[in-house]
Amino acid sequence: MQEASSDMIKKIGIRIPSWYPGRNAIIRGILYFLRKNEVSWQLEIPRKSDGELPELKIDDSWEGDGIISFRYTEDEIKSFQERGINLVNISSVLAPNVTTIKPDNVQAGEVAARHLSDLGLKRVIFIGRSNRDYSSDRWTGLKGECDKKGIEHALYEFDVNALPQHERAAFLKEKLSGMLPELEYPIGVLASDDLMAGNVISICKQLEIEIPKQVAIVGFGNNPLFCLTHLPSLTSVDIPSTSIGYKAAEAMNALINGKTYPAMTEIPVEQFKMRTSTNTLAYHDPRTKAAIEYIRAEAPRRLLKVQDVCKAANLSQSSLKVIMAKTLGRSPKKEIDIVRANTFREYLINTDKSIGEIAYAMGFTASEDASRFFRKMMQMTPTEYRKQHK
Image (cartoon, rainbow, N blue to C red; front, top):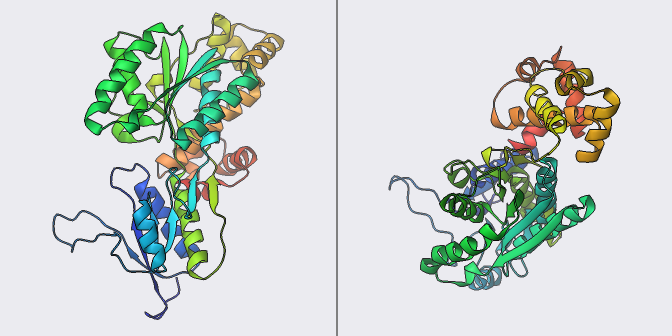
C-alpha cells in the first residue's frame, strides 16, 4: 500500500457489534480492498481491551470522513449527514438515504429451498418475523424455488420484534408450541435467522419432535453462538461477509472522493453449512436413498465413478439416471461434481490447507487437476475463491 501524507488520509469509522458473526470477515474484506487498491485510511474500530486502550465510541458526536456501520438510528443519520460524514450501511435493515451493502436475501431463501428439496422433502415452511424486509425477502426466495420444484410451502410470521425484550421468549414459545405439533411430517423449516431457528430447535425438543427425522431446520447467518451450541447443531445459510466488507469499502471510497455509487448493492448468497439439523434423507425408495447417501459419503474423498454408485445402490446406469433426474433434477455425474465442489469450498474457507493438500485429501491425481475442476465448477480459481470468502 502506498504511503500517503497525513493530510490526505481519510478517517473512517467501522462500527459492527461484537455479537455479529461476520464481524471479523467484514473487516478482512475492508482491509483486502485497501491493500488491493493501494488506499490508505485511518481506521477507527471500537474494540474491547479490558481498559488497556482508550474507549472509542462512534456515535453522533464522532468526527471523521465516513462511517461503515451495521445499522444506524434516524437521529444518527441526520446528525452525521448534516456534518458531511459519508455513510455506508451493511445491515439488511435498510437505512433511509444511506448507501447499503447487504446479502441477497431472496437468493438466501432459494439456497435453503434447494437444500431442503435435495433431502427429498415435499413440504417446507418459513418461520419469519413480521415487518422485517429481510425476512420477507428470504420467504420470497423460498417460495419461488418451491413453486419451481412443486413443493408444498407455507408462511408463518410472528411480530416478535414489536414486543419488549422480556416478553419475546414466552411469546415465541407459545406460538411455536401451538403450530409445530400441527405440521405434517416430515417437513423442512427455513427460519428467518439463526436466532429464530434456535427457538424452533428448543421447542421441538421440548415437544419430543425428532430433528431432523420429522423436522429438518435451516437458519441464516451461520453464527457459531447459535449453530454449534444447539443439539442437534444447526444447518445455516452463510452470510457473504468478506464480500460485503470489500464492497462497503469500495462504496465508501467512491463517496469520500465525490463519486456516485448505487444506493443498494446485493451480494450473492451461495453457501450454506450443513450440520446435524438437516442430516436426513426423506426418500421412500431405499435405492434412491442408498445412491444419494453413497455419493455424499464417498465423493468428498475420492474420484467417484457413476458405475460405483450403481453397484452400491444395486441399480443399472439407466435406472440411476432416471431416479436422479426425478428426485434431484440432475444427473448422477452432476451430483458427484456438486458434492466435490462443495467439499473443495469447505476446505478453502475453513482450513489453511494448500491446493496440493486439498487435492490429495479429495483423491485428485494432481493439484492441477483439482484446480481445473474447481475453475470449471465455480468459474474462478481456488486461490481467487479463498481470497473472496476466507
